[in-house]
Image 1 (cartoon, rainbow, N blue to C red):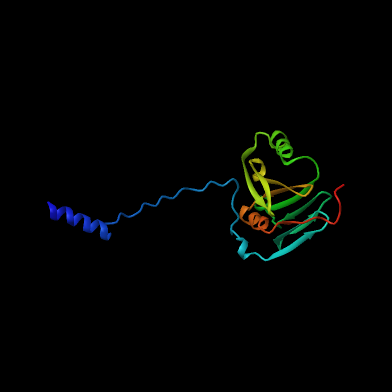
Image 2: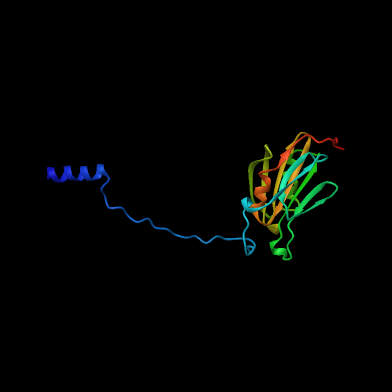
Length: 178
């Protein structure tokens, strides 16, 4: 009996024990929209830099995307013939109200009943609020830099949009807020 107990401790302490084979289970991934036939990662994209001195931000975007400047926003959009594969990111600004007021307006207004999740993150070195919606697979990010509120709306490939968000930087604009 003593030899058996001693043998057990020797085997246990030397690690000489039969190993069980781990069980691997695959869980299907649920997607809200069909995926493009080839997924492009941010590392394989050729990037261009966009800088807007009036709005006070710069961002890198895929070189094959278009840029549309509107009065209060800049839209970066993929060139896709299939709307299901379209991707975009819009950076807009507003000098009015607090982020909490803006969040309330979004959750009680246009996106009421369509909010999937609200979380906090950092964008361009600033604290931000992320709102994931079921409406057109949109994610809205709101943040504040200086006296301006910025809204970032993304649709489509989260991997590319997150790559773009990693490059977003805010700076004090040359044009004062009106």
